[in-house]
Picture (tube, rainbow, N blue to C red):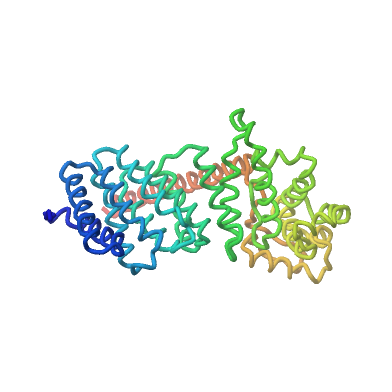
Length: 415
């Protein structure tokens, strides 16, 4: 019987081949098993010595197939160790293309049975991700991890990574279409997760924003209608979202002329550009539609009152009479301060209440839409502040010169 000679550096790979081969041939008896195990170990050694890492990947994954299809035969710790050693092959590949080929093989093997130990499979995929130097390879592995988490119903293991998506996208350097696929996959994971409404809305926005309204998008922008509607409904439903730029996104704007979703777009327009009175008129005419989308009328009134208060803050030059608030919010005089407190609690309004003059003096408010006009307004304010600061500096410098001159004259007079 031939003897396998291990080198210290490659010993883990040969150990994995022997371990998996022993398991694969365990039921055949030593007369059959020993020669097969030895053959596989010798083949592995040849691949290692020749630097044939892609062939080594085929061999190791084939040997480990039994562990993945029948993982109960080995403890999770041993299975993870075996797979980690296999993943390390990408660090030995002679080229980026070869590393990607090995990556493809590993991903295909790990995602074949997503509902069997998905947490362990995801952990191995993330280990593979960290071993890869190629941004493209990292993006590929992360995409496979998303697919595995979705199919294996193991979203809780990948959701924590979503907070780093922006830096991932920058690192990977992926294009608009790849980003679109990524954000759509994430929204589908977040859609049914409790307590993730804001994150779901955030990634819906990111997905919809990948449609620029160009000719290149004309054939696919229609595919985004359901997500556009979902984003609108999430915004209207959310009790603590008061600003969004959905109206300016082409994928959402297309709904305005869509016979199936025109009313949903109109509802968004009301919440972002109009006041309570307009919503009540809409609700009277479209009660069934609101109910179909799970919108609660009383909750919509509450949010629309706060939205109306923000609109008043934009239109009243910083001072809002109580009478304007009672009229727009359709409330009694003694409820005004209650709604002011509510707006302050949501951090959408900073103000002082002048009870004597029955006015609210606004120092800051959230803009429901932050588009080009708002950017221009901010630019104007910054220009004024810059001018004021420059004027203050000039005054200080002038006073300093005057003071120094006075001190100098005083010194001369003393002499």
